Length: 574
Image (cartoon, rainbow, N blue to C red):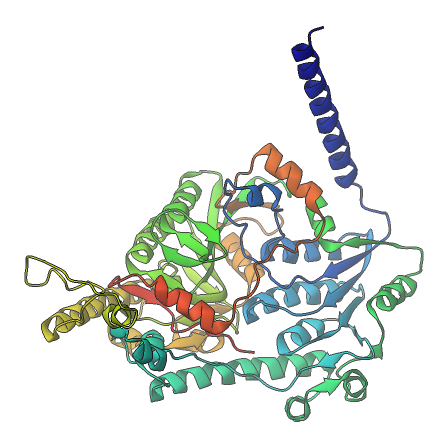
């Protein structure tokens, strides 16, 4: 055998052996059997998504695993409640970067597990209100001896960049439709207007009330007692036990042992993620589509990157909705929205497809953490809207503008000179301010977008335009307030949305429903293979950038003069 052929033979043998090892490892990791007597261990992730990230083509995507979504985890916990092999659930909770609606969604599933008669334990090592709210669903809450419970109230902050813009010579040129549409204030002001402060305070107040009521019910305390405890926080572990906020001092491993001993001992433990991955999809003749609308709304295809985050591409979502609309086996659609809005044009295109779907079959919109501005816009054509009390929604308004960078260029020793033809040829240039006439014209464009937005909501919600305008004006509401204002129909999560979909589609209560998830994320065989081998738990989240850095990145990518239906700031109530 020649040297060349021998080398080729060796390469082929090594490749075959390599694939054999990969397949063997995959088979070992994917053993489908669940132990006959199991304690589920839920290592609660810091981040939790509503949908799988769009598949890319880079090396990172090759090893990126499919992380369980909100729907997958909540459904898995509820199915575990009915699984005779599962005896108990243990949650290990650290920091959560979820919104309040996602916390409520998973907490509700945990409460259903507990109502089945099976014990739930929570290990709470540290964190604040969101983490403790989830932990409160457990019958037993444990803290390590040096743990800290940061239960001391809620805050929300807003960052203003006008002072810095003035220092670097950048001039903001913006217009807004709606006196509460305060997104432009980050660039145009150094502090909140009265309406912006009023709206933000109302959001914090609503969430505080929901928190107090939930904790009071969970821990068997009066609302006044919970308020008094919050005012005494934060708490060390021993103080939390003394105050009745925690039940015992135990480390994680000790809590696992306690749970195993409490259900009879000699039970195997299994991670919830692994349990969920082994569940088979229920098969039935009735199908309901779960269509995820996640991210900032934009034209084109959905995408995700560390710099831009989740982008909800109108093209991708419309394709998914159209497929759900045209498939005869699908009897209803649940549109799951987790979006702060974005492009007004893209939002309107999605709204049109939702309207077409609703003409053919029931469409129920289910709101996650955010369904505001454009995120609300795309949902108003649905037959019914369901939101969690902590959902941020509304923000019916529009804004847009540009940043004049010429002053900054001058400070850097640069200069820009422009030649043009046409009275308003430089209207959207980043090197000059609007003239008074151009500012008036641009304001009229924003007002027109607002008028169309009002009309869409009026048509979808069956409300007079004047009434929509009175609760619009760009103001953000919690789901708790939105249901009283007629912007939302029902308080609840995905179970309520599916139950309404089942009822509207005339599906018998005893019939098994198969849930078809859209948009479909197609990954190659090698992507799935390497992803499964990469590890059981996920730790691929991008490093969190400081708020001021994120704000400047957003400003740098600001779409010049494009009408935006986007909620103000990045509201984070903690």
